[in-house]
Amino acid sequence: MTSENRNMILAIVMSMAVLIAWQFFSGVPQMEQQRQAAQQQAAQQQTPAPGQAGTDAGTQAPAPGTVAPSPAATPPRAMTRAEALARTPRVAIDTPSVVGSIALRGGRIDDLSLKGYHETVDNSSPIIVLLSPSGGPNPFYAEFGWVPGAGSTVAVPAADTLWTAPEGARLTPETPLVLTWDNGAGLTFRRTVSIDANYMFHVVDEVDNATAEPVALHPYALVSRHGTPHTLGYYILHEGLIGVTSEGGLHEVKYKDIAERKSESFPSVGGWLGITDKYWAATVIPGAEEKVQARFSAAQAGNDLTYQTDFLGDAVTVAPGAKASTDGRLFAGAKVVQLVDGYQQQYNIDRFDRLIDWGWFYFITKPLFLVIDWIYRFVGNFGVAILAVTVMLKAIFFPLANKSYASMAKMKAVQPEIAALRERYGDDRVKLQQEMMEIYKKEKINPVAGCLPILIQIPVFFALYKVLFVTIEMRHAPFFGWIRDLSAPDPTTIFNLFGLIPWDPGTVPVIGHFLMLGVWPIIMGCTMWAQMKLNPTPPDPTQKMIFDWMPLVFTFMLASFASGLVIYWAWNNTLSVIQQSIIMRKNGVKIELWDNVKSTFIRKKKPKAG
Image 1 (cartoon, helix red, strand yellow):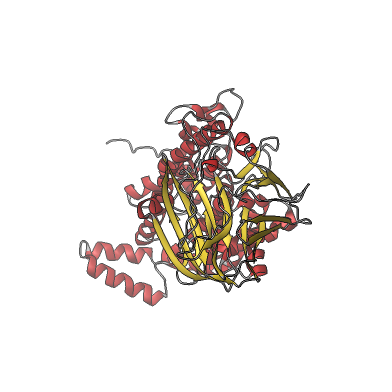
Image 2 (tube, rainbow, N blue to C red):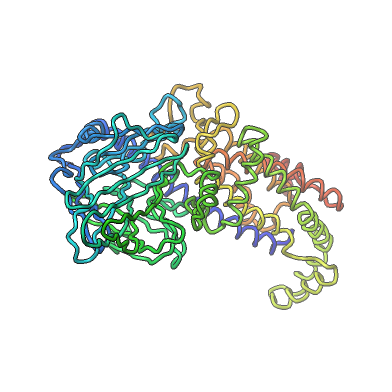
């Protein structure tokens, strides 16, 4: 490998190091802050802070009409979640995937927990709470309804409207819920809510006009979240307002951005919009052919901001003695890839799969996950599936690697000629490069061939990083032994002898996350060191020092990464050492591994003076 090749590889690796270092020094502290904030948030759900009363003041139906908050919708003091739920009659929701209730006052879907997901890897920990009512901690809910046409004063259901439900009503996949309300002025509103076995609600709103005049009403739906939630803050993950419109495509708006801009509107035919967390989301979905005005907004509500996504449909005119209806859907649950893709196909939802943040490398990231998921269905372990995919990738790119190492073998053969050129031309680098290129052309050598395996590995590495980071399938997915969550760092550390000493280095202030150096990061560092030692020692002392220290630096940096990613890298390094050794032996290139290892630990004797 020439010094030019080494410089290019060094530049690539150092670029990766910069990104990883950012994650290590910035992302990990943010993760720790997020963990502490989550604990405080959980505590607040049990014991409310004084003076933090919930409010609907920031929630409003989209123009042309608005729904002002009523005194009944604004509680006089802070409440626990249980108290907020108890202040209005409710109809229970119970499916194989979710449990919760719908508030009869306001008709909101504002109480939803996910049965299949727990807060920690321990199945005895509480299940995930997604939607919560106004008045309690962290309100997050969905609402459907009607807005009067411009200039109209007709009474429509509002936040304080008390809907009527049949005695003993219960929303299940087999039993839809029918709510009714009479405005006392000739209009009867009927709402039918149904739900499947997973996370999709279907809401049909009907109006019966018994007056002597036609009535124009606009259907709307919204998702509202009170207060700015704690986010992980990673540049590779979107958390906030999200949607797809026919006019603007995918919209991803962070909380801080919409707080500055206040409001954004987009015309659309169909589409969807909502609010997403890392693993969970709530989105409202109009009909695929329905013309709507979609909007993202933020409004001040007391001391907090309220974030809202909503859509407003074209006016529906209800003739005297006639009926009219509109329908929409609400997805509220875990962003399971198979479910999200299935809903996209089943209901013709435009690019609904982008609800999962596959990132810029969508064309690599999603196929990579689908292959891993397909293998998982056979082996029953995502860690094993990742190892199998690594072998498959090595097999796919084996011809390219073979050419790469063959080119390196030829390059090593011409090193005496290159050395002679360096002696001849000295500091005349232009002439030196010209003569070197002539040799490469004559011997049919590609001087950058040695970089190709690394160039291929980088997008795969980041795609797998994304898969492990954003897909809920990887959350709490076990491997073997002590690895109970492939999406979390290795929980062991050498600094307490891997658990033999009853002390948690992670609790040390400021530097605690630096001390969490587990078994798998150490294995990865050893395999990376072996791969470095497989190649000849760089002649440049600076390069040699960097390559010698790089495995150690990466060991500490990757210790805070998802254990699944570290396992992948360790396995990939091992396969690379085996693969490179076989190809080099086949092409007659000396394998430098053992000689370089000996030179590391055995110092050369200095020649005796005189």
